[in-house]
Each structure stands twice: as C-alpha cells, then as structure tokens.
Image (cartoon, rainbow, N blue to C red; front, side):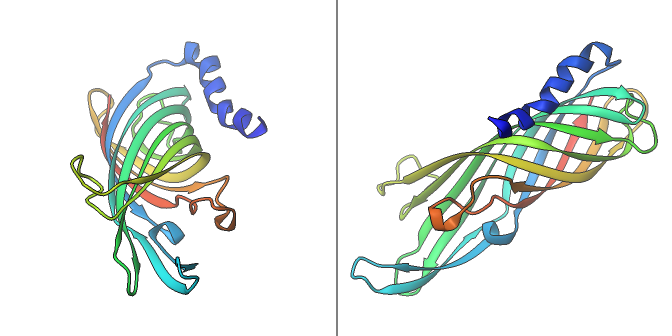
Amino acid sequence: MRRTTLLLLPLLLVSGVALRAQSPHMGFSLNLINPTGDFASKRYTSIDSLGQPYDGKMTYDLGLGGSFTVSFPVDRALAIRLNLSGSAENGTDRAAGYSDINLRHSMFSLGGDIQIFPNGTAFRHRGLYFVGGLSADFEQFDRSYGDINSYYSYAPVDTTRKSRMGGSLGIGHSFGYDAGVRFTLEATYHTSLTSHDMQAGDPPSTDFVKVAFGFVF
C-alpha cells in the first residue's frame, strides 16, 4: 500500500495543478531500449533433470517501444508529465550441450514524471530539461524452444508475469520554435525498484537505457 501511494503521488499532483496548467503538451515517441546489467546479460548455474549442474547465460537484445505523454506546465521551470509506454525485447538462453531457448520480454508502463526546465521554458516545452519519475510496470517474460514471435509455432511458450514499481531518471531536449510541433530527443535510465530477488524466483531487475525520438505539440 505504501509503495502504491508513492507511485500515485505524481498523478495526484497532476489532478491538483491541471486546472492551473496553461497549455498541456501532448507527445509521441519511438523508443530504442538498450538492456543493461543483469537484464542485458546474466550468467547462472542450474540443475538438470538428472541432478547435474550446468552453467547458462541469458541475454536480451536491443528492443523497440513507443510512448504517449501529456506534460502539464506548473510554472516557468516545472512541468508534471503523465506517460503511457510499451516495449519489447527478444533474447536467448544458452547453455553448452543444450538447445537454445528463445526469450521475449514485454512491458507496459503507466507513469508520472517531474520535468525541470532550467531555462524557464516549461510553458513552451522548449529547450533542455531534466526528467525523473515513478511507474507501474506490467511485465511479461516468455520462454520457448520455437519461434517465440510466431503465432503458428509448434513449441509451447512458458510465460511469467510480473507487476512492480519502476523508476527513471534522464535528460531531454525539445527542438523548435515557441509554437507548432517540436522535435524531442530524450535519454533516460530505468530500473525496477521492487521485487527482483533472483533467489526467490523473481526475474532480474529490468534495467535499461531508453532513447526516445518523438514530437510534442
């Protein structure tokens, strides 16, 4: 309950300041997801059906995603942003002497961010800004010996679902004039803040760098 309350704080702030917001800015972006840490590459030791130990390695590749955002300026230097985003990455679980297992991770996130515009351009959503916030991450981890992206694959898919809180911190820049459509470039680091105890069976922390290319109106 406490964690949920902390996650909802940015959303509650938005409801309180939305009436004062001069011009909310909507945005869309295409996101490149670069896994880092154990999410990018994780070595492990396990036991096979005969009770023999073996070493393996799980890796995830560069992924793609998209975001929809609404930024509410509060004053010249501060804005509060709501965002909906989704992404997916493919990967492989390899172990010497065993068949490779295909992996896929997909995530849908609902988040609230704080944007700081040091040059006082929040109302126009222009120039340099810093961003940080919390998100509710709804994740799915798929494993299969077949083509995991094919609906017609013969092999069964083992699926694990996980809901946990995430946090992000980054920097962005909005290019363009005071009016009209502006191009945005943003880089943020995301990490899971709860429930990634590998020994308890949790998936590793979903850590990645997201580079977003988009537009804001």
